[in-house]
Image 1 (cartoon, helix red, strand yellow):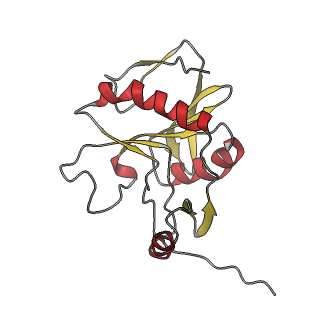
Image 2 (cartoon, rainbow, N blue to C red):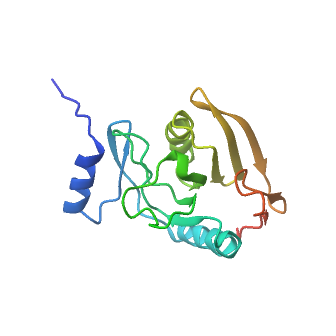
Length: 177
């Protein structure tokens, strides 16, 4: 008989210390090894960083592919986080959902997983706004309630978008693809 093991954040952090090249996410007690980052994924994330960096300076901390502590059983690694500024830059502990101003997942190759597994997890933990960057455009998810987002909109190329919690940061959605 097969035995399923559930993990805690501390165990996955210890495992990550032993295998630093392994990109591990803990989602509801289950460990997932993330696929290597493609040049397309990395380049698009770089474009978004270029677009946001100057606009959020002094308003938010930018974090790239860094852990977000949701619970003792969940430590996802979103592609991009905009966080409430803190003097210690979150050196004492990973940020929690209350600190998140915006979370972005580049979902070009992971769309079903991000939509079906990660998005409901973010909603259950109260992350206020999640952007899923998919091939058809930017899917914006807001108003988390009862494990789902109740406001969804698709931002097409050439349209403008403003993060809900950073109303002074409007961007023109013109990705290089």
